[in-house]
Image (cartoon, rainbow, N blue to C red):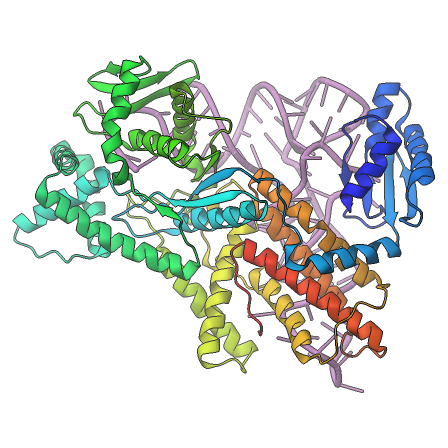
Length: 563
RNA sequence: GCCCCCGUAGUUCAAUGGAUAGAACGAGGGACUUCUAAUCCCCAAAUAGGGGUUCGAUUCCUCUCGGGGGCACCA
């Protein structure tokens, strides 16, 4: 609908002014509003209110008959009220589009790679991985709905000094004659302990570095240990991913790029982009105002910087990616600035730039970063379990009818959806202080609110025996409000895709659910006395529930039919 | 020292440079013989501070204060 309004205004304004059309949130300002008069006022040096009146008159003269109920010029703004007839026509359009409503072809012909998840092998998943994973999965879905060819990409950190540390610690224990259990928890403990001691004792650091290098050069025992740790970690990651409903199209760990690293460094050196400095190979980035990028250590070992260059090259050349989105925490800001600058220098970038989709840190109750190195750590598996348990408790109390396997399934969905929604409903690149209470809130603007709204609509549809036909007009304010909200869905998705903002969609769904609940309370559906009204409202319920479900699914949330 | 992110009701969050800064939780008041009250309706409450840019600034620039993160061989 907004496109129609825009073209009507454009016709009246006559030139391609940069006006905007918005949907005012406050009542009394119409369904749509434009600031076009301000732009003309600047060009013609006339008061905005005068321009607004002129535009309004022109629109009244040219607009299709019966489209607007009212047009009002107010302090330079022009407000539009769309007629009931136009709203009803819009509903028919949305209803027949069904779940295709909201899709677009904006991204047709473009391939986007979304990197997210990316666990650190050897360390258990922590809460930060949840953020990357669910933001990434939501963006993946949203971009897909806009016609992009999207590849979800997992980039596990399976090849670094952390292994040297773990291997060194493991061997040390073994030498001391102690038995070491081969589990993720045990390796984490070894890692944290050794890391702490390393700070006091530089000799230990040397040993770890040596073990890392041996691993990278293919030492038999080290590779065997590495493989063991790798399998344990990837097993856990796969399990958690399944729980979260996350799937990856491609998963290449850092070790995958091992064969390319030497060439990357040689090429950069040969082209004079990289230089040797203090025994290491670096790429100076003074022109960009950035610190140098170290791509090879003085002992000859490669770093994640080198791997990231190789990975980007691989994606751009082999996968012909037009766009790469890195869903990685804000703390790596500098790393990505450097990486992108280097890629530009190496000439790997084509039309689109890679984008670092940042998110804030998860802080502990002391407002400090939760660092695995320092042994501070919130286990993702634990958070998920807690969420599911809590929702099972609430379900038993509020919906005692739900039992057995349905109870199990429903509490899993509610718990996980709540975790996801809690994160997806905020844009904040600011940090989040971890708080169980808040993380598992089921009230207000939360996943259960949306799921409950959906389940109630489904319940109406289940109980209805009437044929669904759209024969009556929608006249109530509650109905019109919902239709206008449904009409907004395509814009919302476009905005979310263009800005990589899942929260735009989350907040929209909340507003949609609010409008639906308002309707639910004021307009009876099955109880409507006229059968034509009943069947129309059923059609209305069907369409609204389809869009709500679609939006939730795009965020990566599952719905339940009964709650 | 330099760079980046952030500062909005008591709390947690919204607001492509637009009008009277929106919600939720919490506080107060109301609505279940009627499709599920995990709901709905009403009510009080906020832009850290100083300059600047302009028709208009929570948003852009600048300074100050406050919180967090990063800055050569970890990822």
